[in-house]
Length: 135
Image (cartoon, rainbow, N blue to C red; front, side):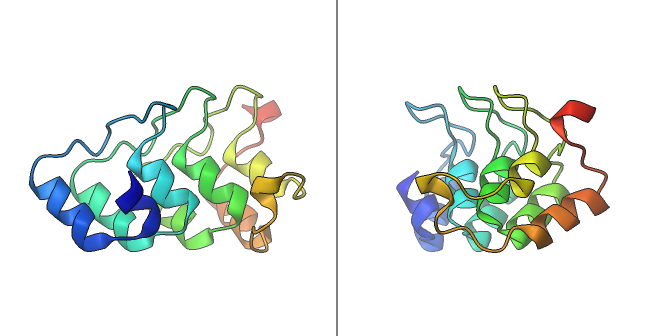
């Protein structure tokens, strides 16, 4: 998990080639794809998809990799996730989709380092994403 969140592509590749499960859950219920998506590690994300990472896995809070990337305004990560089958209409336990998360104002410590999220919201809308109240 640490190699994916820090962008250590050689280590991720070695682990995956040795048979590591790209969908293995941490004790918090997240996956390497979720970690890489929340830290803008596009090269790691590509490696994980080469080994069949699940783009729609939801953790114990219903969060997905797409929601994690949307919360930070990582538009390229969101694009990669959508291109690899991420469902933009999945909801978390609060009934929010990735679009809801991209549209909300930064309000927590997790949102402080977020990029401008408008391009992310625009991409999601262009790909047919809906708000949680519309799903």
